[in-house]
Image (tube, rainbow, N blue to C red; front, side, top):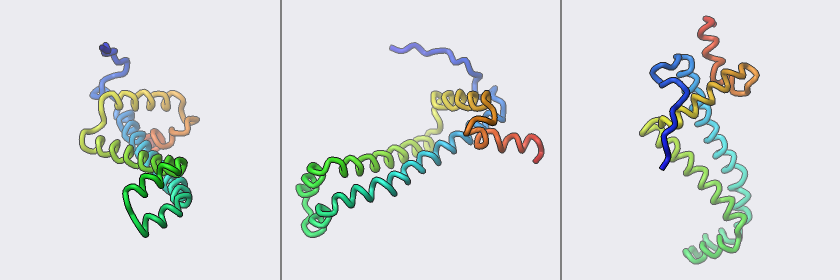
Length: 144
């Protein structure tokens, strides 16, 4: 059994509103990043995989059977792997977003996001994600 480790970060009720906003922005950025990866996979790997399966697709359009589908995919492992990667990434992104929409962000993931936000804040504007997490907050504080 795992022992629960004490958290060194403050509970969410005591968080600075700036950090709360930064956590939400980082979460949004991760959401958009996941969907961008899924889109890039579907625009790059999926067409190449379908093109490699063009002979089987022609056969499936004429005489579709589950056996033809099974053997077409079994004897073309690279295109099958490419399509499986595209489908897996799509399902992963859908499940991840659905879980967050229905249940919310878990405490464990919230702590992970908080640690990441703290690292971004510690590094400052030289961090690539600074602009997305703290850039808008700093403008609001300065009155710009």
